[in-house]
Length: 204
View 1 (cartoon, helix red, strand yellow):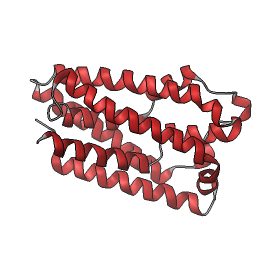
View 2 (cartoon, rainbow, N blue to C red):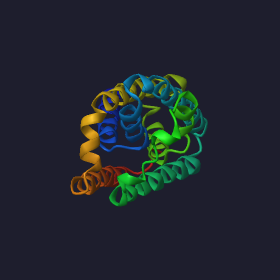
View 3 (cartoon, rainbow, N blue to C red):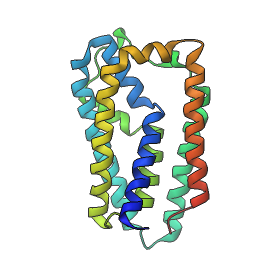
View 4 (cartoon, rainbow, N blue to C red):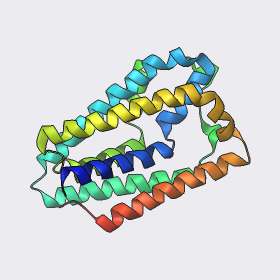
């Protein structure tokens, strides 16, 4: 796979990820709705730091195993399991389960960082994109940083967008009639991505 094809595929995967709201997006718009847009500055900063640490660590781990096909295949299927679990969760998701409330208090830098390490969707995407695209995008640290530069810049922009449009979107997600449909569509999109990765198989 050449670098151009890899970059286009990576952008497509990121687009699908952004169309399927996960913990980061849902927390960003709920939090801004409660405490105002400025309250999300430290939260989003923490999300960015946590995502960088996770992506760089996972990238180094996968790159160090580049000669170990068994390990790469295992990591691929771990990512697939995370992705499948997230797709199923979206089909069953109840927006009332969101636990960001005034009684919780403002969420800040530390929460933003910690969220990335308990985010199943994040683990799925990071493992899968790192295992697929490190080599086509330069290999080693260069490939890892290329992926991080693209994903981090787009994800930060997306979190800012969720912050600004949260008030409008919250009505859609909290509506008892429309909310289940929205999350089922998101689950369907993740399922299609899972099938695509299943057809492609591990990058070994």
